Image (cartoon, rainbow, N blue to C red):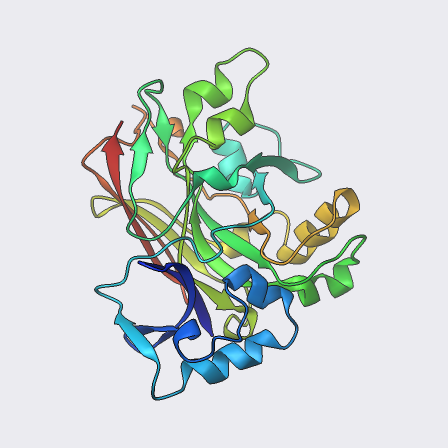
Length: 286
């Protein structure tokens, strides 16, 4: 199943992608939880959502006409893993990490498919990073690696936009600050449930700027697996349904190129992951 959050005159509404349309779930079952995050938190709601998406009286919005939020627009946490592709760590001239390198973004950074990435006036080095995003499916703490996949609801396509001048050139370095400007966390278009993803570690991942391929790799290059990331995070904090985990980016970031390549207003950024879909966002200058 592919869950999404529609931007409607009634506000954000949970939806399921069926064919070439998004089905507004609340139009067929007003007893369903009112958000994707709430559906994930209710053990019986996923089956009810699937049934609701098949009803003939459902309100449908064509993919071509749909306006989308991030699939989970209201997560409690957005956690990011840095340097999680071996070749990316090498191109960044940083040691291969022995444990996951963590930072965070705030929900105010989230945008959906089709929404604009805003290059802020105060940064001249805004970079791109294609990423696989894990969506947590149930609450857990001190989760073993063997059971970690039970806590995964599914996956989405993510773009970890990064202001390198703020991240790397400020006193003490400021990873979180450089990563969490408004609009710096595009995700979408949908949350693909894990039953549709046989192996999250064998997915082609690509990023294009105005049609030019800048990153082209495979999630099999990740240093820490989905299960390892879930287990490690759960040592530190309680994971909740709807939490979003960015899992790192492959080689090809603009900051590592000669000369460097940074996002500019007027461009279009596309992140594509096999089996998960295509996330497209225009880039505008503040």
